[in-house]
Length: 491
Ligand SMILES: Cc1ncc(COP(=O)(O)O)c(C=O)c1O
View 1 (cartoon, rainbow, N blue to C red):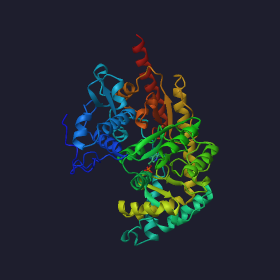
View 2 (cartoon, rainbow, N blue to C red):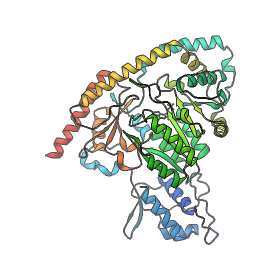
View 3 (cartoon, rainbow, N blue to C red):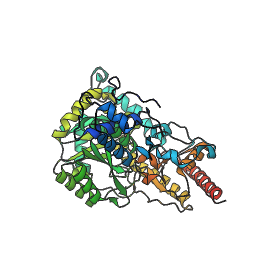
View 4 (cartoon, protein in one colour):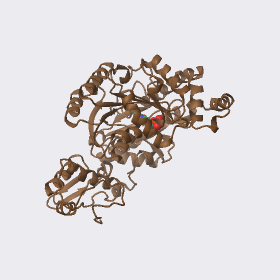
């Protein structure tokens, strides 16, 4: 390990900006600066798992800060699971959860140690890791027709820039759509078109997160949101979500104690658990948000993907005080290739978001917006969604049927794309994944959705990408591999 100098002006990501000429430049935020600096360097790989970190004394000397300030930063890093301490030896980088569970040499297989994007790049015949709808269930053949229609209707389309806020015709259509389906009282000016919900999350992080800020997020949570917020230097405060929804007492305490920048939540067929929060909890959440003046970032990707009953209205509809910012993606079930999503927000939140969007890309491509507009307003869309719901439900039923002999715990989701399954404690999830990948079966280990260890025994199985036959065969094989591991471990 090389101990690089602490203050590195050439490295933009290191956030430690301490005036080392001053003897004790302590402010009440000093330890946060040290915390973020160490966390950032661990994240970008300067210090690998188990590497020894600079001593308290060395950091104190380099920064001119008091040793207690450095010590406090290390204590917080330890509590948050980024570092661990060895008696009389100092602090070391805590490896990601996946690395500590199984011995790679004993297993004779490489363990997967990457992130979700890397997992998705691994080809698999039985694809249960991508929370995507198979292109076979999407209306691809109609799109050529819509592209042609777009050019007939708007011959100069590609000779024009899109506006940063998004096409007015599209925003007006979405305004009518939200009013009708979700009881939103919004104006087209309160809608910002984004290139996927992922961009919406990034814009929100860009506008509201500064290093060391607290952000409330579900545990487990959508993995890419965790990554974006952490990359911005946020301190994540995790709040539980399970089959009963949220623990509102925990949320209230966290809002009171941390005064977070916002609470990012995915309350409708939550990714990865599939949980759908009740209308009662939605109302209570918007009340809490208003009481503690805490923004709610409601990420809604599966509103239309329900199997029997429509989910309750989005939180945005219940919020009369204007503390909810609503992100709605149409990527999954209309066309992932068009990357169409939007943010709905009240004017005071809207202005900085529009500025950030303008800086990010100047506007989502106009051709995509117009093709989406034509398809979204056609009768075909409704027919497509109805068929899609049936097809997805059948796939889920097949998956559950194949899992039924295992006794593994899961709650059957009422919508969405994923089954969140708890494996018994004696099955090592990293080992199961390594063995499955070898057999060309892919799923996501729960640890990728969490920063606590609570999701380590879970796996996310997506049922919307594989065909019915692939689900049957793939899950049978996955179960056989797990049983084989169980019988080997009991020998
Ligand atoms: C909860 C959640 N938010 C956002 C996204 C990203 O959506 P998009 O494809 O529109 O960028 C996903 C995609 O999986 C998701 O599950």
